[in-house]
Image (cartoon, rainbow, N blue to C red; front, side):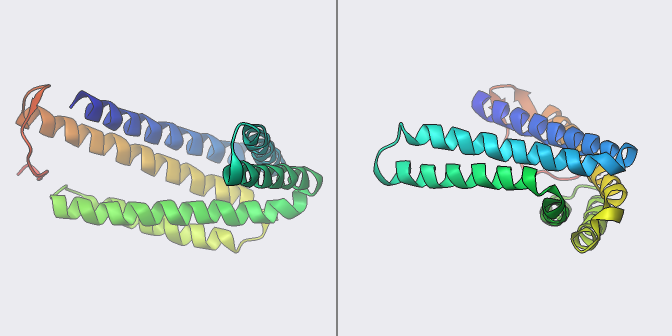
Length: 199
């Protein structure tokens, strides 16, 4: 039970960290729209090159097929990072697509979660559903937008998306704590019940 509780807490804090990071990126896009695009490209390129070098180094400690596979992936990542630094303008267009794709995938996940919440009897599940649907539509629009106009737009979307995810995480966490307090005798003796909304 303790391991399960630790895993739940880890997932919660991971979600909060991702939400805050998304909000921070959104704020940067709004405050520094002209330079944020270049900064994001260089950051992403640096991360890709770093991962590539790690994979390349690790390949020397692997045997057989996995070592060769790690070499290929590592070199590919390093070349991709170098290409991104040399041709940032080309990569900006891809960055817009990937940002939009991230928002679409994350929003689709939230839509599925909101449907599950409705089945669990959690109130106001439709707010999560509606906000996720709006985020998905905005993400699709973002994928086909021109980069020169997109950074402020991306900042707004990332800010809304981060706030939505943060509120969702804190709301679900509060709900779980209330249910745990209601149905738990002590930390080691949890009654297994379905999550239902309090009437």
